[in-house]
Structure formats: C-alpha cells, structure tokens
Image (cartoon, rainbow, N blue to C red; front, side, top):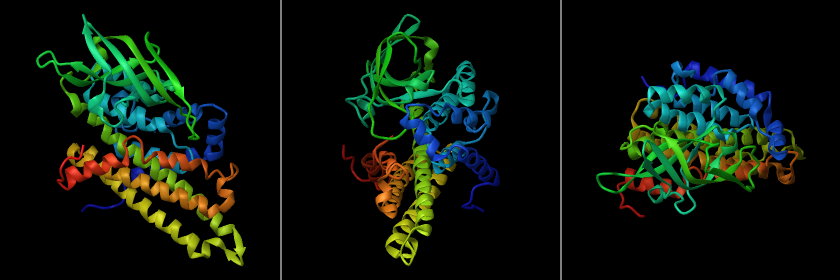
Length: 386
C-alpha cells in the first residue's frame, strides 16, 4: 500500500536538522549575509552530523540515502530561516552526477570532501548568451594530447568563492560527426586561467553569485566525468535533483514565512481581537499553506521517482514540484509581508528580505515559463514552441 507520509527515519532526520538549524536561526543568517560573512559554521556542523552528504553512498562518507533525504535537509534549514543554496549545488547536483557516472577514482577523490564539507563543489552551466537554452552553450573543451583545454564564460554561478572545484558543462567536438556534444568536467577553482567576479545582487544571502571566465584552462584527462558520449543523459541526472532541491528550498522558505506571519497574526491586535481572526488576514495565509503542502507532496513524489531510477517520469514531476513550490513561496511571503503591515518592510521583522529570495525561485534554476513549455510538450503533447 502506498502512503503519503514519509518514513519515520526521514521524519526523524527532519526533526534533527530543524533542531540544529534553530540554534542558528534567521537573525544569525541575515547578520552573516549583511556583514559579508559566510555560514561556514552551520555548513560544517551539518556535515559533521552527517546531513550534508546524506544522499551520497556510504563507502564515500555519505549516508546512503536518496535525493528525498537531502531535500528534507534543505527544506528544514530553509524553514528555520537558514536556506543554504550550496545544498542544492554541491551534494545534490555534483554529488549525484559523480556518484552515478564517476569512475571509482573520481568518486574517491571528490565525494568524501562533498560529504564532510571540506571540498564543496559548485556547478556551472548558465552562460551570458545562452540563458535557459543549454544547446547554445559556447564553452568548449578540446583535446590537447592527454589533456583537455576549456575556454568560455559562465554567469550566475553560486558559491564559487566557497568551492574547491566546479563541475563545468562544456561542449566537446565529436570526432566522428564534428558536432559539439555536452560534457562535464571538474575544474579546480584555483586553476590557471580560471577567474571569477562577484555579481552585485539584491538578494539577502551569504552565498554570492559570480561571472566566471575560463581562459584556456588545462585539465588532466580524468577531469572528464562520465562517458564523453554520455551527453544530455548525464547532465539531466543532475538537473532533476536540482529542481527537487530548488522546490524544497522554496517550500522551506514558505514555511518560515507562514510560521512568522501566523505568530504575528495571533498576537497583533488592532480591532479588539487578534488580526488573525479577520478573514482578510487568515485566508491568504491559509491559501498559501494549502499551496505549499501540495507542492511538498509533489516534491515527495518527484524524489521517490528519482530514487527509483525512473528518470523520465521524474523529469515531469521534478519540474512540476519546482513550479508549484516557487509559486507557493511567492504567495506565502507576499501574504506574510502583508500580514505584518508596515512592520513587514522593516529589517527588524525580517520579512521583506524574503521577497527577493522567494521570487528568485520563479527564475532559477529554470524559469517557470520553461517549465510550462516542458509540461505543454511532454505532458500534454502540444507542439514545441521554441
């Protein structure tokens, strides 16, 4: 019989992560972000407790769980006001791709550091002129003897300053056809020719975004992850987990906003009774809660499909989960700000800072419009629109 509740083990994981993150909380997180400091202390404590690499195989220092487990960790951190964007990138995208397609030597070299937090890995796919069109990627990889030489640019790459390596999506020439095919390379952030500059962002986050310049970076042949001819299949192995993690990031933010707003609505009294008794306040919060629970359920479904190895069905569910979660988060945060009235746009109450963070979920890692294109084509069988 299929149930719609998580296992006791995962529920306990959620409780433990929530308890750990509560010791830090939103005020600590925002103070770090505004002062230009990092959340390394929290990151390393998560790693030490075994939560960072909970989805990585045990033989490489991980917990041996699935994407649903690391998504639960991501959500509970966000629900306590400490959303860690690098959770999406390092263990979920990079960890999944390397665990699935890396050689035994590559797994041994990179996965333990991802698990224990000492060798965080970033992910670089987006380019200035390609945007969401991954087929337009112009970062190239060419063979030179027993080395690879990478050249190109990337943009909106998270946490490069905190990462020891970056998993870069480039295109290599197929010797048989002459066409360019996508390939994945692990690039050290201190490699000659690898440079990055921070992009000023309005979002309140200790994790920065960067433009990356790759100027004839030379890599050993074993920097290539997976089969040179594996192409999009290998790339998408990381993108379904990315969407699931982004969904959990959003649902966690929504839970945090709704918890703060509900507490405020129970205490704030203007017309005889607490404002939470007024339907104009209560209904938007209740609506947002319903939307968020539906998004959480779809995220759970997508996670189960990824963990079962059903990549095609997982692609549809993961896209739907990410779409639903982003919409729910935007509605939840907007309702939470409105509930607080003027206090909603002060730094003291910490609501307004969530607006950009929640809104970013509609754009990254894939826009809501591209998800609608995907669903129109693959779920409804409509003609391709682009």
